[in-house]
Image 1: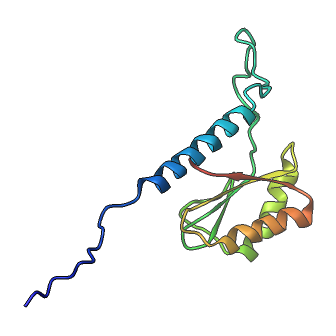
Image 2 (image 1 turned 180 degrees about the vertical axis):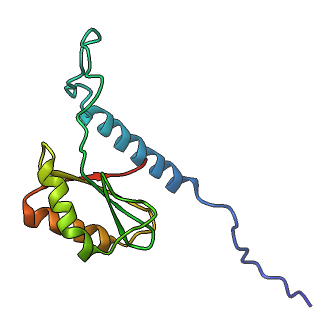
Length: 136
């Protein structure tokens, strides 16, 4: 008994579709390289331009700890953080005594966003400029 079939399944793939795909990609990259703009203007400083050595400091700052408590600097104790309601008047006094009406906000990486937003809202309500400090 001959049980073999005469119709065999071809396992090899067709190369014509692969060449079409490569041709389309080639056309795409040629068009994109022609359309790219290599003459983007950059405003770079001259090599002989002297850059400022030190930027102005923002003296008043609020540090947000890991457990969402606050330390007001200068004059605050990092070992004795306070609640938000306790720092409102203290921050207002520190910012009013500085030469600029700005407040530096530094937070622990595990602090809640809500803790940072409360200080930002305080800045907005008093029309202070918030300066967010972050570490790269």
